[in-house]
Image (cartoon, rainbow, N blue to C red; front, side, top):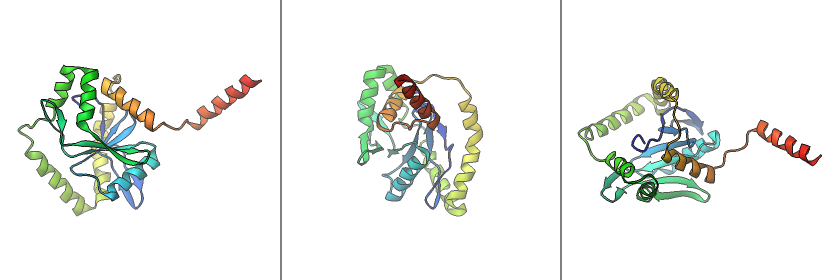
Length: 202
């Protein structure tokens, strides 16, 4: 997301869903969606939580499945799993990177591909993931998620205060979100539209 200039907040919202609280990994304000990162396809329980979070907040939850890798042709070995009109749909990350190449150009595309290449810290990340899972089990997932949200709150507030304009990638995400998940019109705005329509008829 940093490589393609998509602004995000990390674990900002703790959402009450059936039987527990749900803490999506990322919130992308420009598109008003949540992004969850999963090493494998989400379980039916995880998908159900995402659907409940969508209903509770009006924000769709999208999964990035598996760890992105890249070669000279684009991204590979992962996909985006998104809610569709008739259930969940999978979109190859390679298909998305090819669209990005056409719109953003070679330099931006190569920067995105290089962002997922292995580096010296890659061996450290799985240790951190294991430790996080152990902590979840020891202290209970809901209480741990409440704690994590507070840890990230200050950083998210600092990031949110910076002025910025929507990047090319954010414009694409926003287009997708608005096309498939139109936001409901706020009640006050609806009242104003009705009054204007009635006024025009008189």
